[in-house]
Structure formats: structure tokens, C-alpha cells
Length: 121
Image (tube, rainbow, N blue to C red; front, side, top):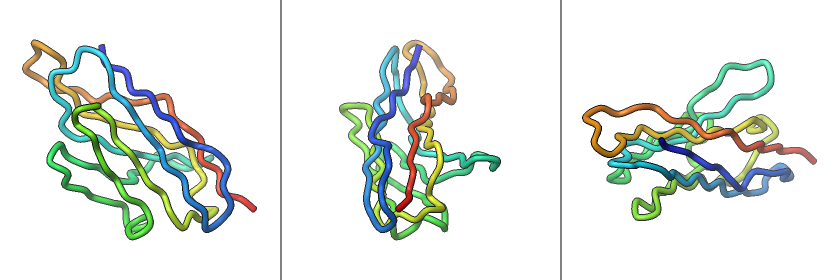
């Protein structure tokens, strides 16, 4: 009923920048929180940051000051601007959204398929 499609991953040198996008589509009533998680090889998935529909953000300590979340509610899209990238930022980045579908009174958690970010010289 709801699909999240990520884009913008790739290979970048240390110190470089990337911008990830995630667009939600489908039978959307409301999107509450959108965010990004990441999972490096042989590690657990971890939170990168979240943004509410009002633009309130929270970040993991490891990315604060380097990564910036923004959101276009009209387009149901969330962006992750990543600056000063480090090799330890290498991971598969997943978009997440808490969505109430149309005609429903409850919300559910949805995930994108992931986009690879590799930071290497």
C-alpha cells in the first residue's frame, strides 16, 4: 500500500558529500516521522536520524553536525544531506516512514529497499 524509493547513493571519497532522497507513494493518509537508518556489513542496523512532519529532527551522535535531514511534505519526500563523509559511514542506507494509510486509524512502519553509500579513496 505504501512504497518508499531511495536514490542518491554511490561511491565518494573521504571528506566528500552525497545527498540521499526517499519518496513515499501509495495510499497515504498521513506521514508522521520519516528517517534514515544504516547497516554496515556484519553490524546491526542503526538510526541515522529522523524528522517529523513539523521538521523536528534528531540525529545519531556519530553524524550530528555532518548530516542534515530535510523534508518536503507536499512531495512525501525526505532528504539526507551527508557532508564530510568518513569511511565508517559506509553502509546500506534505508529510508523509514511511519505512515497512516487512507481510511485507516492506525499507523505502520515502512521501509525502502536500501541504497549503498561507500566512502573510500
